Amino acid sequence: FPLEGADWGKSAKQKVGSEATRSEPEAWSFLQQKWPTSPSARDDPKAPFGPEGLHAELLRWLSANPPDSLTSYWGTSYDRLMVGLPPLRFQVATPKVHCDHIFHMRRWVKTTPDYQDAGGDLLPSTGQPRWKLSVLQRPKAKGRFITNLEEILEMLRQRFGKEFVVDVVPELKGAPWTAQFRRFAHTNLLVATHGAAMAWLWAQPKGSAAIEFRTKGSPAFIIQCSEVWNRDTHET
Image 1 (cartoon, rainbow, N blue to C red):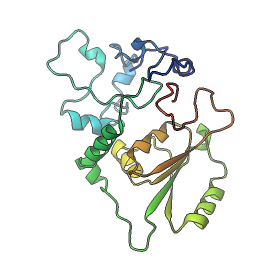
Image 2: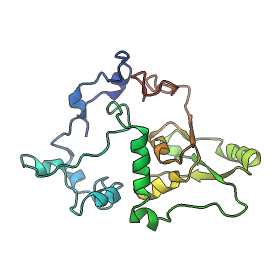
Image 3: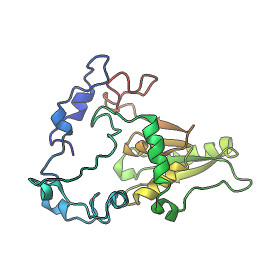
Image 4: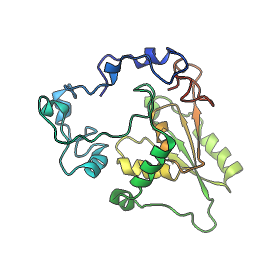
């Protein structure tokens, strides 16, 4: 829960040398004892941590106790703390997650009852293409909308119809976390405009790829990925 007012964009523009460290104050990434600051958010069942929220399944895997806001525990003592994986997003903190961490996490998610209830692993039907190509299309009103998607889909089917099953992924908001994971766990090639949904590339099978569309006016701090990703200290 980053500190309010943290300027990730400003931090991402600053290159701090050859070491894989960031320039933002460490306090920006500390847990904030007043989170969430809005009282209504604490009682919202659809909040990410709520019983109907995006993270409900994950939290249920970790504990039988319902989650609560940090304000409820302020000033108390703890017998046990559970700390998850460091964030993948470079603007939140310097990533300390390695490929083997992601591999084990992906394998563990597939063992959960929620994943099996969602359908489990998919096997290609006889005579069907082996690979799956997913194109993420956001609602037009929200921007980063692919205006000529139908043209692109027709081209993909004509040129690669024998190699790929082409799947259009609508807006992900509201879909359960495990269902989202499963969708991308069976995506061999992900195509999307820049956005948080691209973070699901970690769920893709080994040997997969992702293609990111970026507009000419994209913010300067969103640096193009290259062979020095995670080593030049200012990637996002």
